[in-house]
Length: 151
Image 1: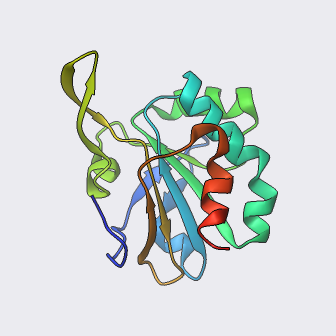
Image 2: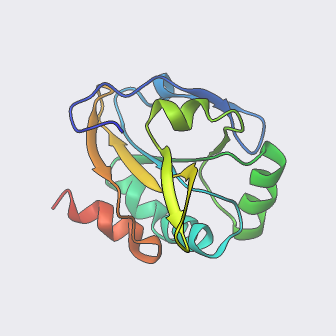
């Protein structure tokens, strides 16, 4: 898992509209890159909609927002369309970006351990360094969780 002060790994992937999205596009801006397990599931929908509902405030505070999950571009397109999500969702079915950021690892459910996506948000500063890491994401209040780090 990346830590504060680490250089953010470069990434490049396709979003829900087939557009190429990469780290260098956000140079000079703060980037909220959030990793979530699956489109259109309860927790992931709450998180995405909370970021959507606070998107204008995030932009006003100088944050760009990008979501990443292992889902396909088609799945992202359906999810973003259903909930009017205004930010890019990068499809990472090969887990390349997810693993580069350390957002893949051991999880457990009902006493069974397995490998999976660790819901995590990274805030990358204007110079490409990790400024904040949020590992305990509050899906229904994530934007305020981010804003509180910058009060």
